[in-house]
Length: 282
Image 1 (cartoon, rainbow, N blue to C red):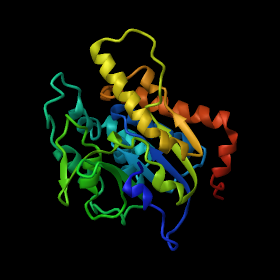
Image 2 (tube, rainbow, N blue to C red):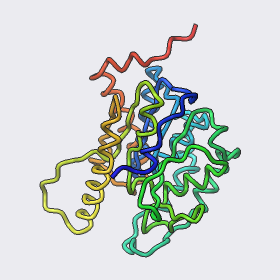
Image 3 (cartoon, rainbow, N blue to C red):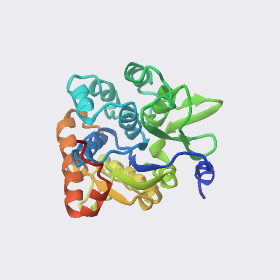
């Protein structure tokens, strides 16, 4: 069954179309690879004009849409401004207890970096994916004067954060139902790039209970990403998942580099993507 939002997400006839859109998946700390992907694309003069994202993808996407460069975002992490915020989501054995963390840190961060707090005032078009527990559907938010609230909702990992009540609806992490939300970009962009940090990896070894839980969640996320993956013209998969897990926030530099390498290698293997390059400025 398609999401209600997917069924009615086609742009109005007067709505602008963009040349390049990029969809950023959820994946906790693995999402730092998105910053590396964006940096590699920019190094090849490929500049997305519209961004969609779930969970950590909505944070990186929101920062990028606000005009921050990948270099600036990486520096913010090094300075502790992003690292300390996301570090509150470290895995705990009692993960099943609701509300281990509140949303104050994410809300404060977004208000600090995007003080206008408005989708319409961003430099690039942004689509944030959230999961509506009340209706059982994923939704795409692209217009609101409460940008921080919707990004926080998109990052509300069940069991780590409480659900957010917005307009009498209960919302949690967008990745729960749609971890690679490229759908709103497909009809609005000529070309869609996907950055998926939770690609499926075949597992043949015997797993311990905690590893089984992690692998099971990854498989579920991959399955709900399939529809979004098929809507991408180009799909970049970071290998960070092979060495790191979703809560390795202290490995941000290595994860960033994995994203940069993945995008650079993808461009090398798929040179046709270079047709998306912006002209060299004189």
